[in-house]
Amino acid sequence: MIIRRASTIATTILIILSAASCSGNSNETESPITRNPLLRPSDYTETAPAVFQVQLETSAGDLTLEIHREWAPLGADRFYNLVNSGYYNETRIYRVIPGFMAQFGLNGDPYVNQAWKSQFIVDDPLVESNVRGRVAFAMSGVHSRTTQVFISYGDNSELDEEGFTPIGEVIDGMDVADSFYADYGDGPPRGNGPYQAMAEARGNEYLDADFPELTRMQRASVVLLN
Image (cartoon, rainbow, N blue to C red; front, side, top):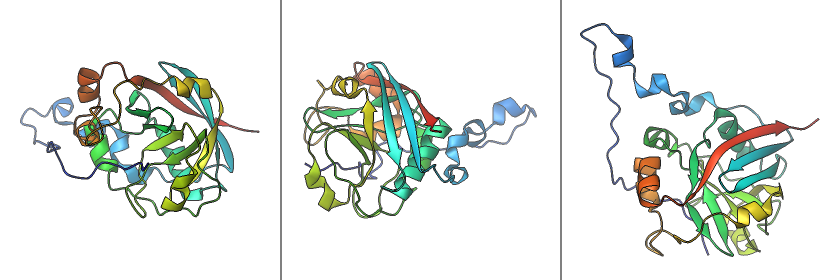
């Protein structure tokens, strides 16, 4: 069982238009980059606290993750910045495989997905194992982590040797994670669930139209510890 990030084969060409204004109305010519700070990944480089919690508010209920920077410093820093930026707000838990894992981390805005798809971070050495409740970044190969993470449903320690380094674990609400909507199954070519490349290219428009029952990630927020 391997978690893989979709290939970068584009199914939809994303074009950011920056047209010159004839009327001088700044609202008409404002580019997506100006409107959405998430289109500037280089702005999100803060160092995470040694330990912090993340509250996930979903349509299935709430759960709490505890992230340990000593487990995976680069991964913890990236997750901290993504949560603080609001990246995971109003996203979908689009890949849920019972007994294996639940995966999320594609933004609802395709322009944002385009901006982050090549923002790779170097792999962290393995410290903890991928057992039930652990949280790790999805990846497609060496040094390929970007924004997607998964929660292990079972003992996935076979992923340890493949470089999937846990950054933390669910400390409250694992029953909520277990209840994430899973009936669509895995995506192509292993199943008929959401196609990751299409979700990346079209965002929530695609997921909500074709897979309306997916569990929704309504909000993710950092909880700092004393």
